[in-house]
Length: 314
Image 1 (cartoon, helix red, strand yellow):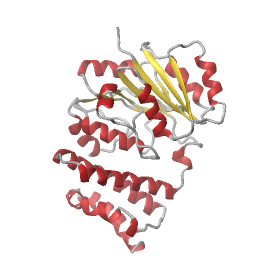
Image 2 (cartoon, one colour; image 1 turned 180 degrees about the vertical axis):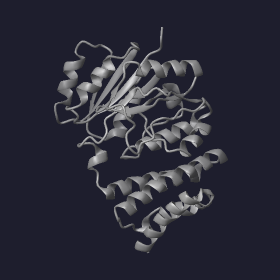
Image 3 (cartoon, one colour; image 1 turned 180 degrees about the horizontal axis):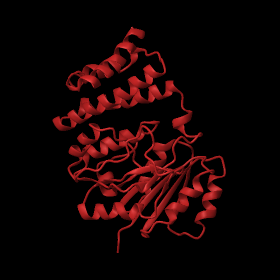
Image 4 (cartoon, one colour; image 1 turned 45 degrees about the vertical axis):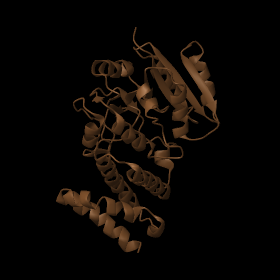
């Protein structure tokens, strides 16, 4: 018999879209699943919609908790999961009928701790500005992560499956309080520790792009900047306590990639930055060698943003 796989679904005030999501999960061709819906203090009719959909499905658990954010909701799901593997589905998205089956087959064949799949928007297109397809040979997590960081691939957790004992034995959880950057944080830390990571070219996850009520479209630029800074600060702290040269190198490459995102947010939105109380200059010092090693065009683009920021924020 195929092993149990846990599908973790955090939900908060998503009554308009949750039916499509849950119906796609219940339609999986892989039947041995448990569905863990974590209701993160919804105040709309989300719970009523869920109750109506799952009344005849005994493999669905609904956990109600006070609103604590996406990271805590996902962690709650991990904590109660009993499957051999876990996967995450956001409640404004949907999965194709063979989503779980296709990823499990690769995990079973390769023994991978993580299998990352591809994704599309609801029209079957790659969302503009997103790197959806990441198809590389199965390899050690650090090697795959290095390839990941060298490409334009989007850091998302929801198109993958993860072996639960790998996640638990390494104490990998989402960082509470993080917004916008929680997927990058979780993904990189997981890949750093994975013995094997495999990929699937199948785009079996459908991502709803530009939902008006989503945090990606409603959060202001200053909060985006603070979110990027918090992530960089966390990775600088990781660097201070890491002894492995390989992992230190990957942490520095991660900081470089995050700094590219952060500087873009600051320059594009003409934001001010208190450099005295910021990790900005510390991060630049740490990644100086990486900046100098980059192709000329990329290096000029990055340093131009840095010069603009420094000129405005002495």
